[in-house]
Amino acid sequence: MGRKRVTVTNENDSGRNTNFHDNYNGADMNRSEFVNQIKSGNYPNYHVRIVNGVETPVSNPDPNRDNNLG
Image 1 (tube, rainbow, N blue to C red):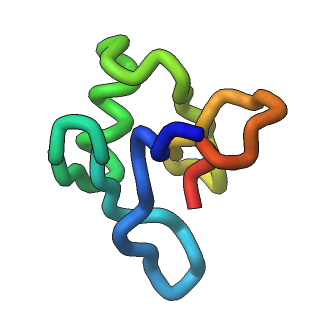
Image 2 (image 1 turned 180 degrees about the vertical axis):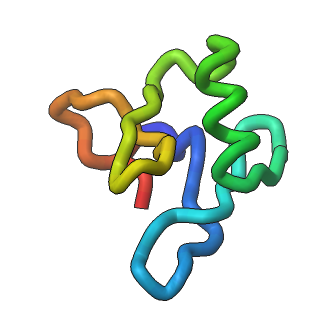
């Protein structure tokens, strides 16, 4: 089984993911940077949802639990 492409490295007190790490290229991103990268097509297995009025990166649904953000 392969490693996750992106892992969450920090979340705020309410549990919202705030910082992310790309395990393939070593990039560290905050939420808005990751959202912009997803919108630019650089992370095809992720999409952006509006959660409580905030653009939020989420992994695309599939049967593999190993690639979920968390």
